[in-house]
Length: 373
Length: 79
Image (cartoon, rainbow over all chains, first blue to last red; front, side, top):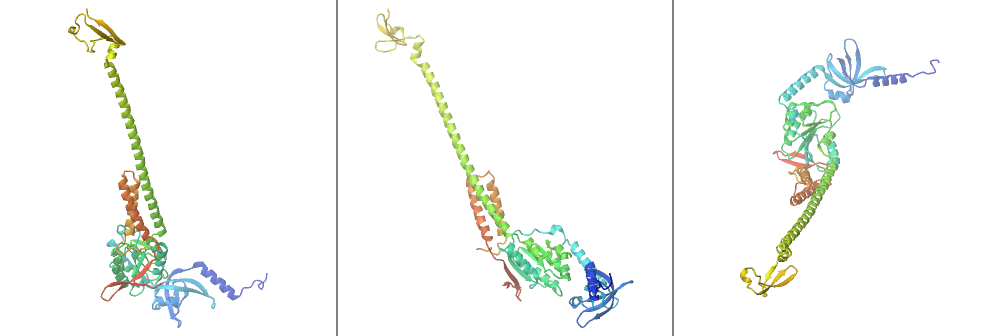
């Protein structure tokens, strides 16, 4: 197989190398010293980053350099976030930078954050015991976010789907950049003047940079002072801001915040339906019990009556027997006889039997004529 | 269709909690029939009110505006 059979063009080669390079590392942070930063007329920055042993050509496109502020001076120690690629036109290795932070600035920022964190922590603003439960069925909810950002839109979408009974009150505030912290403090104070049951504070997804407002001490204190439960939605999966730690509940995104804040109306309707069914069931059970009890009472009454009757009959029989025993006929049957005068009078004494007077003896089965001698 | 009047915010939660309580008591046996009927009536009222609150409604979004003199008012938001 000769070289002519499987030849690559230079373009093929650099394209393939670029693919390998870009696929190999992805986005990374590097640390180095800036050398010769040139600002191109288009707004792109070109510079070299180096350490003691190596260097890399860097490009920072205008979209990103605009956010980075001033171009770094020679010799500045920086953290740079970007991804390695190959500039095919020149066959040059290139690091395309998205974010550029001076290590000194990062150090200052870090120290500042740590001071704020310590102050908030000292005052117990991160304590789990402060966390309040969210209302189960909020009807009015304050949303502190920017008027035009995606956050409000996302929250409205979720509310519409899950909990159309809600009323949302937007308290508009800038959420990043200059003035955001002051806006947020004012907005959070304003929330306390509204009749709401819950407050969602956050910003839409997107940019990872500039969470500063949500790490601001005054903002965090204002958030802690909100009288109703709070949900943070700073739209950032990885970095947790102090506002997230101060809020009663942290949601990764505004949509997630709305999912946590709003119950699913279908489930609540089902719950109400179930309770209605149990209510009806409870009553019918209760009336059935009453009917059964009534029936049982009737049964007992009948038993009692029967008893009484039986006892009455028994007593009557006994009385009848006693009567029978007392009957003169019974006495006669035992062999006694009753002497009676002809007028029917019972003769009880000797004086009743003058000599020669006839009388009759009543025995069990008849009268016997007799006279006294 | 009724929307909950502002100022009675926790009403739905209260109603559902009351309804649960009523159902629980009704399901217990130690209740005389009169009391059960009275509870049932209360339960029906709670249920009706809760259902009204859960009736099809549309999310309302308004923006809070503060006048120069510090008075708050609510403005409608488009979209």
